[in-house]
Amino acid sequence: MRFAFQDPVDEPTWYGSFRRQLQHEFTTHGHLLTEPDDADLGLVFHVVDTAAPRPFLRKHRATFSVGVVAVSGNTEGDLLKEVYPYLVRTISNGLVALDTAASIRPWLITPELGCYALGDNGSGERPYPAIYHALAPMAMSKLVIDNRFMRDLPEELWAGTAQTRELTWASRVVDGWGLLPSPFPIRDLLSPADWRYLTHLYGIGGLSYGNFSIRHDDSRFWMSASGVNKGNLVEIGRDILLVTDYDAEAEAMVLSVPPQVQPRRVSVDAVEHWMIYQSFPEITAMMHLHAWVPDIPVTRFNYPCGTREVGEEMSALLAKEPDPGRAVIGLLNHGITATGTSFHDIISRLEGRVRPQVPMSPAGAQS
Image (cartoon, rainbow, N blue to C red):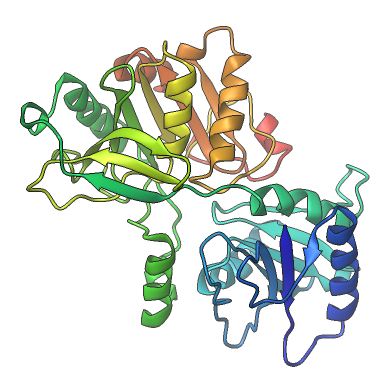
């Protein structure tokens, strides 16, 4: 992986040592230091100007952007409240907050509201190796969020099926559970230009509390669209889409839609669901929620949404379950994915057990 530093014009006193030690850590693991304008840049660190925070203008979405900001003496809750808006305003994939009052104690802030110390937290790991081990897996993950729409959905499916009606029912039930996405109003925190840049970069549909999918047949499945009102999933091609394939070479999901509908993008987690359905024919339906269930297996890393690595880790954990077709797996700092023989089955097992607050530290996720 190629990595770079976008050096600030006026370097703070802590920056030189931070840059040298982090550079040493990444090059020791075989990564190549390059320039911020490198077309093949995989990871960039950029210091946030707290007076006027702006994004690092990466050339493509595969570049993992990490903002760096100095703080002093904050508690975990106050820290998240203070620095999360900087993560949003800089359109970063993650934020490293350096507690300069505690000898550069680093904290990791994630888009899913994660906020936890790296190193010197009882693990015995030093801060800079901890930064590397937290960020490298995320930065090297493969994002799959492109969609290829084929306007070839058979007419007999335009009005939906028994499976899509069950998906609509399940989404309305879960909508009544009061689960909420991130409370930060992203569009309100960005300038119009930065909002356009964000939508161009990721094609986001908006925030929601999760997504739903259900098999259509052995190779295809229906899935909720990105950013839609989950309490009103009705129209085929707009609210619910038929996923027919995954083009690994193009890193794109292939969707079959009615010719007369202007389609929405499928949920960003479609690649995860695709990989799981391919590996476990006994799974009929899946529900992903930004919520938690205690005492469940948990992924090792908080990979970004829409990456192949999420699907690979989920599949590995499901393979260890006594019954992969009826399991609940935790995604670190993110939420849960539940599998079932139907949505009725999943809801009957989750109702009353779901906690709206996702644990945001690796230790908390294990309880």
